Image: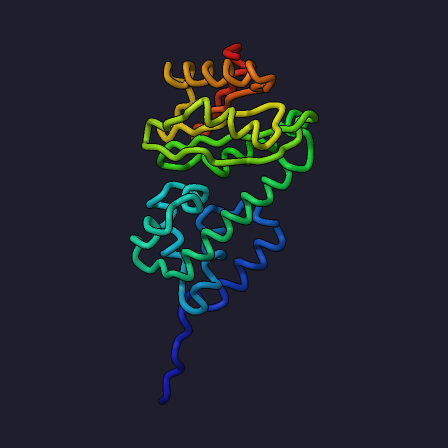
Length: 229
């Protein structure tokens, strides 16, 4: 008697998962399930659930997987170059979508969009980054520029360079943004002093400093809201 070859346990799983996603638009689905679907295209055959779960276990959640560097992702067994490309593509698409929302309206009218964008860009970085929003007279975005990359707890910032760039762009005002890889957005003494120096240099040339935002992994700190400007 010829035995029929048993189908793998995951046969039909992809179809069922896709149907769940379309029906619910992803609501109620676990991070590993969303990541699993993301990995389908890079692994046309086989069960990618174990890999998705391993990635979530290693990095903590879906957002942190998306924010991981290609080098970090490559250390996880089974993560192909195609998978890394897919993961980083989704992050870039999300950042661009949020960035377009920030650019479409005056900054002060889309503050939540600004915070969402900053969290996506910097919230899970393992080193400090310092970026600046340069704004026109109507508080619309002229440029969003990454000025410096630093270490886990320090980014060198030079007030003269900040003001020089603002003049080059014809900016009327600025918003400073940097992240704290520790997760705690509370400003350090160095953060407060650096902000004060930039404000003095900018004000002397008729450029306003609207805010300095520190991004943590789950929260943010606004200098303006806390009376430090």
